[in-house]
Structure formats: C-alpha cells, structure tokens
Image 1: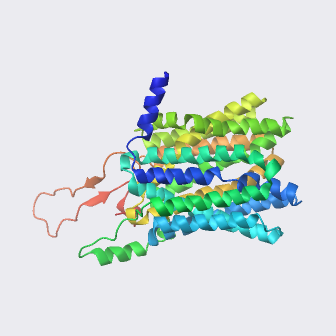
Image 2 (image 1 turned 180 degrees about the horizontal axis):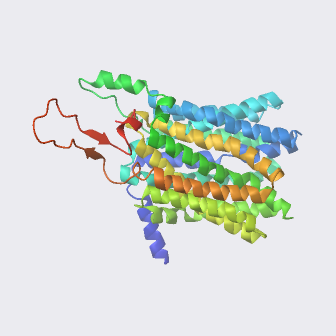
Length: 443
C-alpha cells in the first residue's frame, strides 16, 4: 500500500465529523495522556508505601468495583442532568481523587479514594458516548467511536512512556499531573463542548411522553430484550478480553520468561492500536455490525486460545496481535450498536448499563483468571476463553441479526381480510430490532 493511499485513507477516516466531536476527541486525548494512577498504582503501593501485593490487588479491584456503580449513575445523570454537566462534574471528581492519592497514605484513605475514582472515571463514559451519538450522523457513529477509542489508546501510550519520569519525579508528582490533566479535560468540555441532550418534546402529547421518559430506569432498560442480549454477550467478550491482562504474565512466568519479556509483549497491544486503528476503521466502514461483532468475538477466542500453544515471546506477541485486532473491531462496533438500540431520551442510561458490563468484567475476570491459573492451570484458562469467544460469536449471529439490521425500521401493516370487519383493524406496529413488547422504552 502506497503512502498516498494511506494518506487518502486517513483523510477519509477523519473527514466529515462535526467540530464538537473533535473537541471531545481532544478532551479524551488529554485525559488519557495524564492517566498515570492506574498504570503505576500497584508499584506505588508496594514499593513506595510498603503495602503487600495482596493489598495492591485489592485496591485495583476496588477501582473496578467503583465503576460498577459509577456507570449506571453516569447514565442516569446524563439523561436527567445533561451530558455536559455530567462530564464536567465527573472529571473534576476524578481529578480530586487523583490529587488526594498524592497526599493520603493510610490504607483506608487510599482504598476510599481509588473506589471513588473508579466510580467517577466510569461515570464519565456514558455522557461521552451519548454525546457522540447525539452530534454525529448515524452513518458515521461507528467511525466516530473508533476515532475516540484511538485517542484513548494514543493518550495511554503517551502516558506509559511518560511514566518513566517516576524514577526521578516520584509517584506523587505523577498523580498530581494526572489530576491537572483531568481538570484540563473538564475545562475543554466547559469552554468548547455544547450540550447535546435532546430538547423536551412539544405538542399535546408532550407531558405524557415526558412523564414516560422520566420513568425509564436501569431495570426498564434491561427489559429491552435485544439490548439485554447485547449487554450479556458483551460481558462474555469482556471476560475474554480482560483475562490476558492477568493470565498472560502468569503464563509467561510459568514458562520461565522474564517480566521484561511480558512488558514487551503486552506493549504490542498499544502499538497495534495506535498504528493501525485508522486502517481497521477503513476496513470496517459500512460493514454489518453483526458480522463485525461475530468476527471480533472469534478473534478474541482465537487469540487468547492460541496462548496455550505459545512458547516464546514472539509467539505470545503474535497472539496479542490477533486479539488486539478483535479489540479494535469490537469496542467501537459495540458502542455504535448500543447507540442504535437506545432511544434518544435514554441514551445515557443505555450507555451506562453497557459500561457496567465492562466494569463487572474488570472486577470478576482478574479473580477468575488468577484462580484458574493457580488451580487447573493456564491451559484451562485459555481453553475457556476460546470457548467463550466462540459462544459469544454464535450469540451475536443468532440473537442480534434482526435487531442490528442496517435497513430501516420495518412497518408491519395489518393483513387485509375480505368481507366486513366487525371492529377497527389494529394500528400498524413499528418493529425495530425485535418484537414491540421487547422494547418498552423505544420511541
């Protein structure tokens, strides 16, 4: 592929999106560029403060547990309060927690700060995803999510490289840099990003419709059968995606490979995303979302399953490449599918529930992966992830093909019956992604 072709593909990938999206993209990049806390938290707790590895693992798990509560909270606030104020508030809350970690040294204080930080960081994702769905035309939503995900990983790569400064600046300084970057992110949102929450409807039916919108809850969202299926399948994929971050270093250590070898292997994940996300966007553009979700699930299963066969750093790196391609396809496609199934007035809640599946996996998968490696062994872990990936692919192919169809909503008109009709014919039913009774909050 020539340089001119790559340039043309890059221009096509980034063109045509509204200015507000690029301010949101910039805020994501700034936020992740300063994301030092999670990267170096375990080292700070063990090397700097002298806590045990068990305590460090517990604190990191608390961050995920906070996200389980923060995601639906952010979804509710996004729909009721607005996208912009939710983002600003949660960014400032996360910044306060990062700053507190630079000064708090007690075990309880650190645990509390990390728990609240996890809630705030996860709560900001529903308004970001809802804002993208609000401002970007439907045919460009998946591309916009891909670009935002690219910014997230590009910022994280910069943060990982800059983290080497901990050797002479100290961990506390990095946490303060994290806090400042997060505040700057809130400032960008405050100054440049407009509120995109859909305005209340007007007309004779507006009061009734507004009341119905206010009654939407997390349980109401989960009663939407197609979306509930999407969430459960995403949870399976998230379990597979999270397993290598715990199981891979343990597997490599079991084969006598050093920690530096693992560092080089896992770095492949970020390098591939930063270097090839735009090309993957070009490949996935206009493709069926069901096809992409099936493909990404199979790549996750194949990549993680092949880890059981790897015996060298190069082989392990090859498996990382496979499931990283699955990650680049899955994350934006899943976000776009969530936006597609969500009604306008409940976009935040839908994104919040979907984010909760990521948070649950982030809390559960490390525990399960560690227990399996210590018990039956690494090969069982990788066989299980391969099976789960195939199961998720089958679920997407069989359960969501109609719900995520790219064609327009289908209107099922009443079948005409010859002869007199004793009572009025039923009104046409608008079907969107499944039976009407499966989607109680859809408009």
